Amino acid sequence: MTLATERATPTILELSSEEKVELDRILEENRGRPGATMVVLTLTQERLGYVSPPMQRYIADSMGIPLSHIYGVLTFYSFFRMAPIGRHKVSICLGTACYVRGGPSLVEKLQQVLGVEVGETTEDNRFTLETCRCVGACSQAPVVMIDDDVVGRVQPQDVAKALRKYE
Ligand code: FES
Image 1 (tube, rainbow, N blue to C red):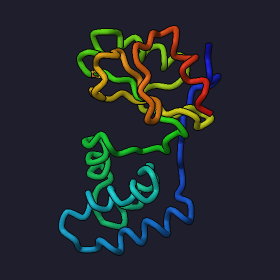
Image 2 (cartoon, rainbow, N blue to C red):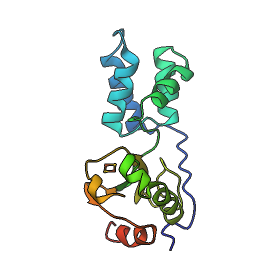
Image 3 (cartoon, helix red, strand yellow):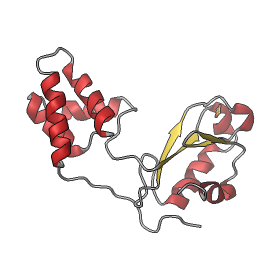
């Protein structure tokens, strides 16, 4: 069963006026501050939800630093997002217990069912697919977290059913 018919390829090309206003505010608050890059990127994600490529360019230009530096920070720290998150976050645990009990096959199945790769959001913005480390429910491995719900002992054939109630 496939929930997404087309692969999601979210491409955000321009800043909205609201994003620009908020970025200007963040940049102004941190002008001349040591270590400002990390602070600016963190505040951007906190207030706008993610740091899109146009936001990255705007921040780099405004701070007079190379875009590659911004990109390097965003890719080094896994908590940064470069695209909006879906209404529901689906995280497959790849901690040791879940890994050996079938976590990787759940990744494969969920990518197939949702039509996205790990780190991407479905085109209808319903789900964002991620992997995570141990969530403390090893006795129920393999585990998938859907938002704050722990779904344990998940088999690949069960994943489509498990997603149904999340609109
Ligand atoms: S390893 Fe997955 S819950 Fe612990």
